[in-house]
Image: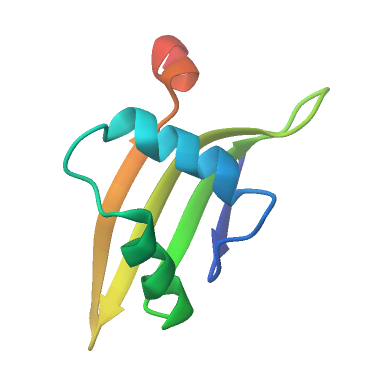
Length: 87
């Protein structure tokens, strides 16, 4: 497994992370436009937990963090349903 941190919502990982995010937070989550704006303003990071194996890498978990001053705020943490089943 490996961790990856991105400072933008890229085309490879964000769609997978977004599915995990939607599944974990069906209500009460930030709108996509707010999340996009946070990344556009360089106020957020996307953290990924990836399982490498024989096939394509599998995204197991994601988090969105933000910074304000000297503080780090973990905004959302979500684990894929499949990963929760075997954890």
